[in-house]
Image (cartoon, rainbow, N blue to C red):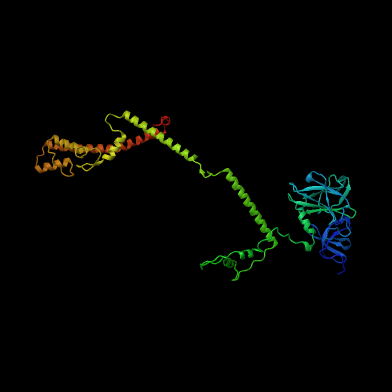
Length: 470
């Protein structure tokens, strides 16, 4: 390999100068990768994925350890440039001179359209406009720079037209104007502000930024080891570590986790930040819900409004029902015949006076004499009228059967009169059965009619207008 310049070495930061204008490399800063042939170096250019081959005489080493200008450069700006763009309606803003890297720079923020256009003015004068040779120019189309002069009416640079710009809404883009030694514009490029700063740093200085707070544990494995181990006394269960090792197909020994990288720590911090924001949003929702729907219990006192309202409604219904009952009683008393029992009295008497007849054994509510039913009482009266003795009453025998037995014992002659009496007794029994069956059929109908009348009375609005009982 041909000998190289001893002043340059791999990893040095250099600036390209005195290159032909069509190359567009003048003022470009990069890092030396390796020597290529005789008197040439492979240069990693800022913001470009591919390396460039540049002759050694066109490379100037940059003093990255200090803050001074590169070799042969000046700490003072060779000229004064301002930038005008769409982000502030083309108002001139001065570009800052970077004496370390020998260029002008300005940071712009991408707006809601996702793109921004700009031009550069020398000394803030529109007659000294610096502009490209086409509209919507970008560093990726090998355009040429014109000016400073009074041209550039429709020509301008535009950030966001090329996919490599990665111009998202709100992104901070650093615009760089590279100039020659005499201060004339040489090249314009741009990139994300943070990426541009990282690219300008030498290889040995590119270290990941330390987190703001040192983690308590070096990695997740150490955190797991620091936790108190659970005790498992039952032989049927195994510790979580052993069970996880069995499920993963590992051996008897537990595999140690690899230390977490900086990228993993950064992702973990992002996850924690997302969880923290989610908790804050949840707490805000809880607070809003508490304000919209306050608790019923305030200052250790319960609100009784609902209970009082329910009690008043129940009292009102009870008063209406009492009015209905009072009205029904008054109507019943006015329409009841003299000596007739009321419905309530008849019901109470029916409930309390129902017993068994001592003659026939049937249940009845109408008793005559010594606890006999109406049919047995009529037979008894007929016997008394005929002169039959009534002092002997066989146990649990109807009156007709008793007479029949007495006649059989005394061997009385059964004349036509006796046969007529027996037929009359049988007819009386038949009549009683018919009356009983008719009552059995009519009573449910009557009860249903009374229930329907009571229901009709309940639906009438008349009850609400009656005065309350005292």
